[in-house]
Image (tube, rainbow over all chains, first blue to last red; front, side):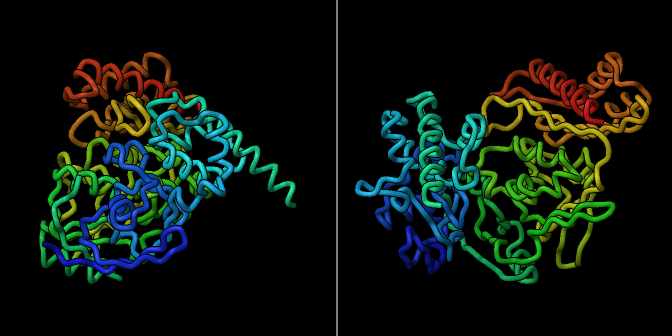
Length: 164
Length: 284
């Protein structure tokens, strides 16, 4: 048994403190310790992106990071992006444009897409496909995911322009 | 998948890193982005009883562009490389290669230092660094030493870096002429079936220098001096391309795996090198 480490994280705006074994992967911290079950465990081998969260402004596969590495970090999961009563434009768009079938990949997809739209507010289809390449969907063939992200980008841009 | 238990260290300076390394020998490993090491630990292919996180050790996240050379800290990520406009101006091949590594999430975390130090024949940066004649700075208890990329790789996961040393920086002579990094992979995120790095100089329609390195076609990256030499003095016509490909095929030693049999890999290596030379020459 290795020595436990004190870890402090800020997850979706809330400070969380706990003792963890160094080998505890962040996805388990989120799901099992903090009951934040939006990020999913898909492949568990850094390929599928179902566990994607945002850590200090970067999209990260939380199955490939130890909680101790994230000490002091700010983390956003799908729960921090929007919920049933305040859907994010991406969540609305995925619903509207059938951007999901089984929905398993969707939290990771939307978390990644939110970061992508921060970096590129009006991406081309090629930019969306390239920027979403770390997230796999086995149902939709991606067409509707691309459409959803395009629709959300248009909606968010229009809302921003209206506000200015 | 849970790795075996380990002790975790997060030192604030290199002296402390080196002293932990000295105490635990090859039971200790340093970790930067962790996107090579953590998957190996989860699969229990790497056993790391003592894990030393470098993220709080300063001085390894800078990109310095000098008059003759470029120095890149070991903790610079692939996405830092992609986003650095000044770097893309002086060494565009780095950005072209980095964009072909893994996927966005992995590029945010994966570092240049980890990519070159790990010694995985599938990693893209080692071959590229051999093409560019880069050198690696490593630091140990006895101080710093500099190892040319072309002398660094001994076998898969075996490099000239000693267990007690940490790779801290990569120094690249400012590249000249046209460039291309061409990679064939089965899918996004995969390692190369074959990849080629080419840097080539055109003087009045004649090739005056060419450097070529290949990735994932042997248990180390392969700098093929013979392939580059086959282009020098030519107008990079079809005969020269054929000669360069033949010379390269003499230097690689692919093995059969889930990316295909040896004959297929040789075929793909030839196609990829042809494309890389043609694109580099068109930019020279």
